[in-house]
Length: 118
Image (cartoon, rainbow, N blue to C red; front, side, top):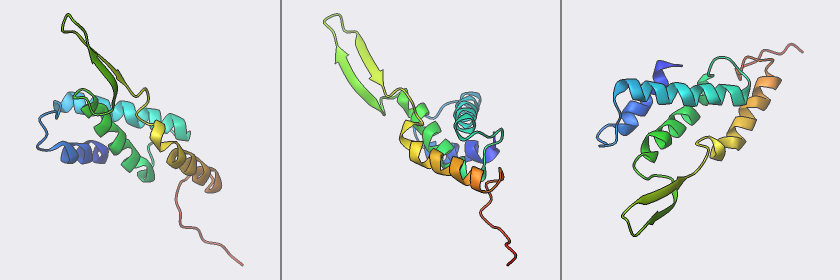
């Protein structure tokens, strides 16, 4: 997992009272990055995918504090039941598909620069 992802998430969460400890933040970033790699079909997170990993990791961290709550209800006993969106990467499916297509087109490198001889 690139350190850039952790640092970018830390920057976005700076000043938030929901910012987790470093070990928890690293674990969230690792989990999101690994799942993103699996969806793209690579073993190492490409630089082009880091922004998706950062956005999704911030959402996962903030879920603890009700960002992304789909439903919430309080019962007579004072209990609270919440239901979160299932998948932090779901809204990025178009971008992930685009990255996967670029990967296939580029022969597995995900670099956009090419030299073509005519």
